[in-house]
Image (tube, rainbow, N blue to C red):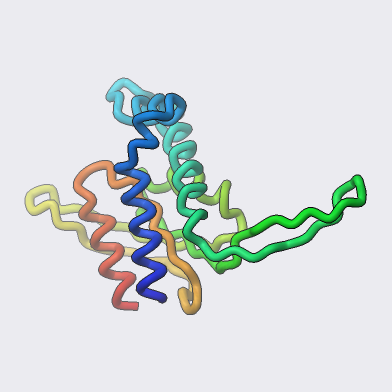
Length: 165
């Protein structure tokens, strides 16, 4: 996997998570409020996580390689659009990452998907990987879609594991 590309994508995720764009976008503020509110039910939590995943996927897509593709419109005019020109693998960590992943899949429907399953030791807060299901990563761009709700330790562990492949 291209280390430079991976760094750019990670910067995109961290930039978006800490970005003032959230603070100034009322629709996203509502979603953040919803997932942080302890009284939020499962259905609303999942819906908000999916919406946040869609937004972040759109932001990340700005850092992906594109290619121009032409199409003839119903009016017979030629229109050129820049579409993503990378093979993507979306990797999530089972738990809260699933509805977040759904948002990314909405934006990148052709992406392959991989999973990590981890268990955290509540005393040490260290996570242990006990299942990895990944497609081939050769020549592909990997985007880890984890919302980092608690410490971020699971995401770090997944990234370290991916680094060894």
